[in-house]
Image (cartoon, rainbow, N blue to C red):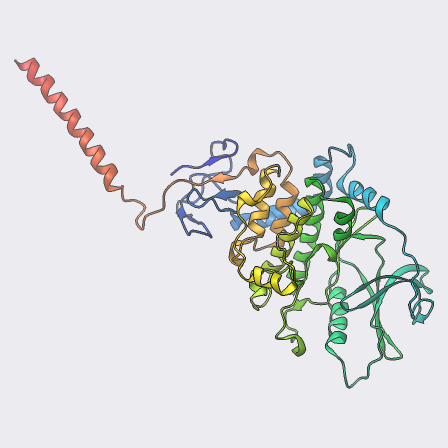
Length: 430
């Protein structure tokens, strides 16, 4: 059985695989025995065209790729921003478009909570208002999120529980692509938490105002969000609301994943008031979540795949007039097909999007780390990262048996040769 690739493979450059190694296509279950090593390589099933990465030995390689992200991105560059890395490219765009926060007429502006003096409203999310504030002790600008309601200790509505869970979950995550939580407090019955202030805009607003982004900038942004998700997944935290509106980009090009208010945390009992609700934002949730199943790390990856598609096209894959109609569409969503993707996308980026947006969670990336690693390599011309197209046949139960058809053909050829030799000798003897 043979393999071909986008570029020719070296002669056993990666070493010969174990004779017992078998690859099984996650989609059609076709089995293959590769003649060359495929560890860490993308492979394509010849039967159904499904592309996935052989992850049997790729974890260390992905970790190394993430560790050298800065040098990788500087090598990729951007055609319209020569000699600038992707952080500065995206940062300059945000700096031009982001407007400084202006104070709004709100009852909390000008008031003080703990050591924080609230200066302006930065925005409003599902769990409460976010204010720009001065930390009067440490003399720095922070963001303060609060619920402008007074509660008692014996009664906490679901919104308050989600608010506190967001602060606790975000505080557990110490990652450069997650917003840092400084303090959680309560004053006069009002809960609040102070966090890193990101001066910039959401990815949703950036695309709305600027339009679809070039592939190199999309890869840069999505790779960093994937790294943040990977850090959360390692701690048993599933975000459950991955979408462009929850991705912040500051004027230096730093990318931050925000809003863990709907996160599911392993080992923590869920909030009963929300147990029968579909959590997430319609249009950005996975098919299994739309059907009421529990979200997993693969569900976050699906949401990130939808975000990638939106960032590249400014079009949403899931569109309907109402939120309930969007949920119904997602309940029946099928795996994204290659012909649905624009033809001008880099081939490897198409492979990444397809694997993120598989209907069955088992067929998606099983690691956000691996997704981030693939995005780092997506635009780098590298012969060793070519997609391997697997052989044309399935492995039989006994791989040592020769196909009966082949046996008959060989036997027939031998009989013809023997007949020819006999005729020659008969002619000589005469």
